[in-house]
Length: 88
Image 1 (cartoon, rainbow, N blue to C red):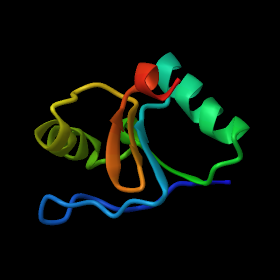
Image 2 (cartoon, rainbow, N blue to C red):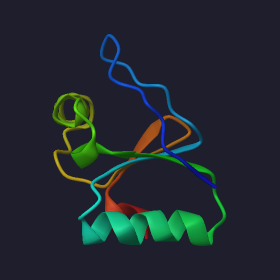
Image 3 (cartoon, one colour):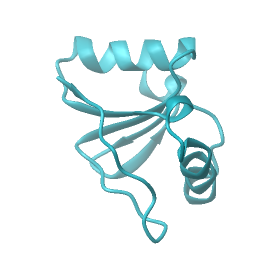
Image 4 (tube, rainbow, N blue to C red):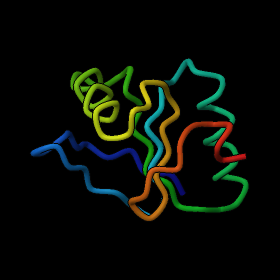
């Protein structure tokens, strides 16, 4: 199951599910990462940053938090895992 929440950065923090993927709809690496978690039947919260009005702000905050500017940007149990290469 995949959820598409409506949340935004709040005081430099985010609420994470067990698996949270910050993504963009047109990104082939994001598609691969989302497919991995779907194949594992893991519930994932997916935020498609390119279709959200606050997507650029979220991506900028993630860069400050993790040092990673690219997507996908994956968190498991609230811990930053990294991008597509880091999840496979």
